Image (cartoon, rainbow, N blue to C red; front, side, top):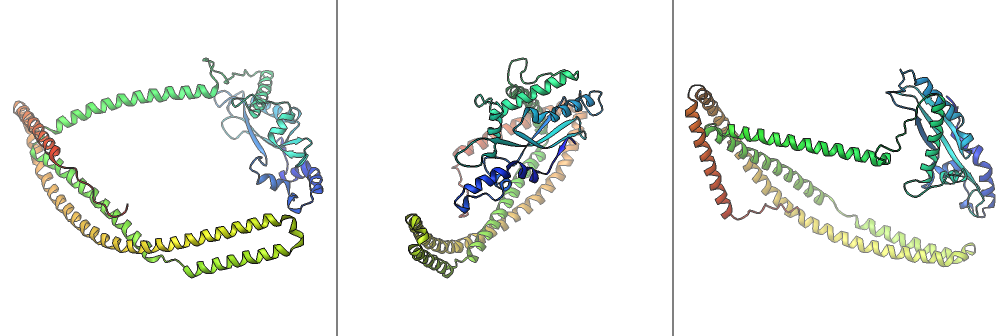
Length: 421
């Protein structure tokens, strides 16, 4: 543990004096800042504090069990203890070296503090960019922001400390090809992806070859095995249709229930709109008579006109919503009819699936017998089997040509719409 302080108390020490000066100058109560830490915590521009992590080497050269571990930890400790000397505008409240992982690493938590005269806002405030700028850092475009410029300076200092402790600094900022580390990593990653794509292509080619061999072997089975394949495809299609019909039926039932159970609270909407208009009217009367707000009278009246316009728009939306609900109820009746029709279709599909399953079991039983005959022919009559294979291949090709001719003359069937579009 190098440094550890309460962040809350730290904020009081750093900013309370400037905060008191700022609040004393404010004439409007709503512009005063009661708690600067909470103010920064909810800010979209600044962070409550910043944390950086530094590490010397990796587990291969400065690992916890290595001889260089103590030297690496000493470098990090020396760096942390001199941090505020180099960075007077970055105030440390926590600094600790962890030795519980693969290699020593340093956690630094700091609050950036900039002190400069300003027409508005606090003189002393939390601003990383302002703090770094006051320390002499300067950005050089998108590729070298002011924060990156500061980090490079800190890395250079750590590199010097490493040399003093006998540790060689192997810079990774530039590769042998002269590319920035980010671009080099991207290039290496692309090379890995290209190699992976090439390997995948080779594997796909091998897989395609294997599939061709498998298909060739399967085509040598008897007619019953072909029947199994066709029936399995048909059963798979029916199973998919069953699942789809189940899903569509569930969706229909859910849509019907939503439509039939939802009713708009028209009276409640009317009461709310009436109260809203009465409130606007009362607000207008109060604003016209209040002397303390005469200066902002025109602006307030403009906002009231805007509220009245929004109320009218809300009324229009209510009317449209009522019409929509009426249409949904009407559509719900149509959904009920379609749901009943879907249930009948589902019943038919399930019946067909059950019949196909029974037929497939029967075909598979017969196929086992033919497989045994096939194996026997392969052992005792290979020439006869080869002629049978050729006949099967020719018959399969003829069947495919016939199916292709039929498909060319059949019109494309449109899928049944269930009224969900």
